[in-house]
Image (cartoon, rainbow, N blue to C red; front, top):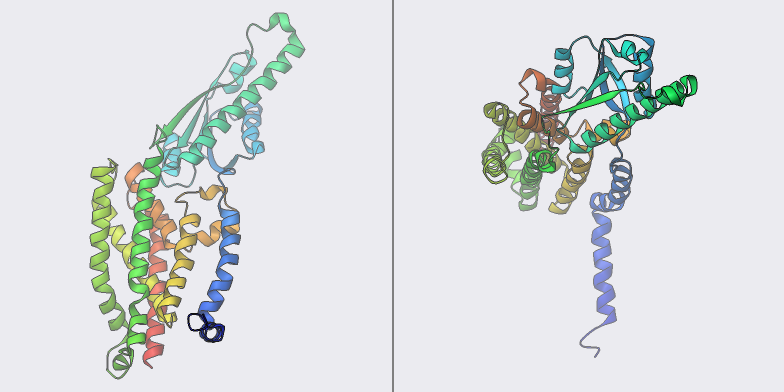
Length: 382
């Protein structure tokens, strides 16, 4: 029996493994800290209870009654009025660019009809590109209006009596949902899934680029050559850019022909911005590769980026439901901006100028990642 299993050999091997783990301090720290970090991030970010939905108001009445009605929306906690506007075109532009999710239009005769015990028609316009937020906005908007109307009716009955309650004041709400009128979940998830898949593939492609060189010993050969850091970065990335774009085209074709997702906007613009995102994700993977000393560290470093990005970018859970600090962390993740670009072009038909709030941060992140990766490679070569 001793020949089959030796406790002495068992403990010797186990001791050796602990020594290896102790020597690989970076992997040990990542393995110990990653569960804590992810639990804190996910604990705050994973939330489907949407509140503080950014709202624009077109108040054509501008009376005490209309201001009281608007205040009911703010007091509910579901809506945050960020813009008071003067035209429907301005409202449409704010919804197109994603600055607001909801628009409320109050007619000129709002107060006059209420004072006549009539029912003015208020219009609520909802951005349907995010069904979770849209459903909350729809149900909450109707609920706020019903509560407001019920309070008016109770006051009227208390004042005039039940005998005169045949014609009661109140607000009629008509709701319009833009971009995804049926609130189909697949119209929301499939474009975002395209971005998630492309990020995961491209980051992992380059996360092992320099690690393989370090483990095989060929990095020393590069050090004695006159090659520059920028040349190394671009030469290593170009083949992966071609592979990444091939994957992008294949995924896009599946979206269109298999899942029947119609692209409302420009396909050319989508491809160009898809190329920018592929370069950005590859740069992120390249940066991870310059820090990692072995493939385990490269894999763990990739997971640190990839797992939170699925939660923080609004791919599944609405960013409106996240605390401001957590949403701010999501702003530095490239996928956050690309998901906005995808849904903007695919669902809304957004043009380049309307996508600038997403394009500019994505471009800046790409430049920063490439610059830091180049500096890291130059330091290694020096």
